[in-house]
Amino acid sequence: MNAEGNCLILIIDDEPTVLDISKKMLEFSGFSVLTASCGREGVDLFRQNAPDVDLVILDMTMPDMDGVATFAQLQSVAPEVRVVVSSGYQQSEAMDQFPSKGPVCFVQKPFRMQTLIQTVKDCVNASA
Image 1 (tube, rainbow, N blue to C red):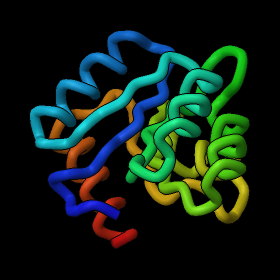
Image 2 (image 1 turned 120 degrees about the vertical axis):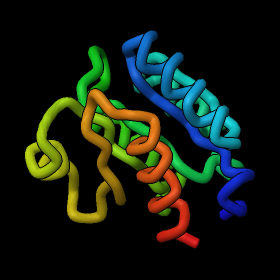
Image 3 (image 1 turned 60 degrees about the vertical axis):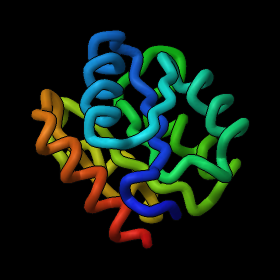
Image 4 (image 1 turned 30 degrees about the horizontal axis):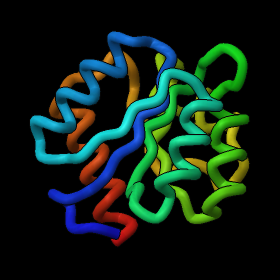
């Protein structure tokens, strides 16, 4: 795990606006960011960069491969993957869909910059 300011974050979300804004928020706060517009692309990108990715921000609802299926694929690459679920659903409703060794954090959409950054920092620090 990298020091907080040098973390590499992978964002997987099918909404271009969410990807763009989240990337800008995180980069403004000193994080390095990779983005993927669907689960399959995200898994491929994670597979290529797994040793360097400190945290994945994963959209819950995506066409083709949803957040739960994407998470399972990420875990098959790196079982210890740290994931923040990003969803418009309530936290309990979203997190109940994952296995017990599921994502470590949750951020409710729509989120403010401060909320996203604090969630990312909490997850990175919890895993250090």
